[in-house]
Length: 190
Image (cartoon, rainbow, N blue to C red; front, side):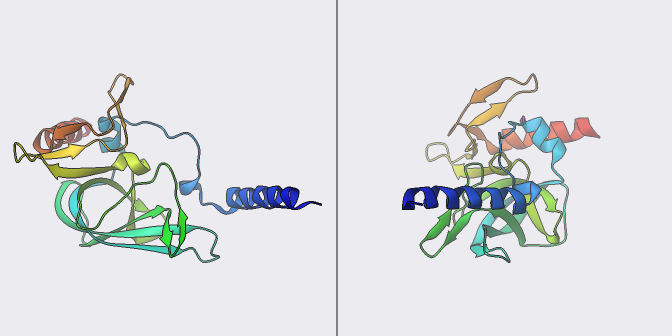
């Protein structure tokens, strides 16, 4: 067998192994676009916080890279928990020269202020996971002209309650206005 065929077969074997061993919460496929109302309703907690630390590591059998991001919670918009800071886990990351990039996972940077839509990790009581992966993370930036804090739609999509999808990558909304929208959705679910 020539080298190209061996390489192809090896890649196929790795792909099949990932399908078998990849936890269901981290399986790939089409990402469902959620409206802000759906994100709010499906999240156990919504927080505003600051990124303190980012740590990537191998899973037990060294087949996947995961990243734990330590977040100092400043404010709860929904829910609450006793831990502070908290750990948010997602698939992907970089260890040395090796990186695992997954298209629908968030990108965290040290000292960034973020709003996160979170659920408990079913595998660990002390770890949180993002609701809808990338859709569950918003960066908070200060507008240089107005000095108003704004939420950035990083994930590139927004879905309204009719199901209409809008491409809004990089668009911003005032943080206070976004929080009011979320609080309205929380009030309506009670």
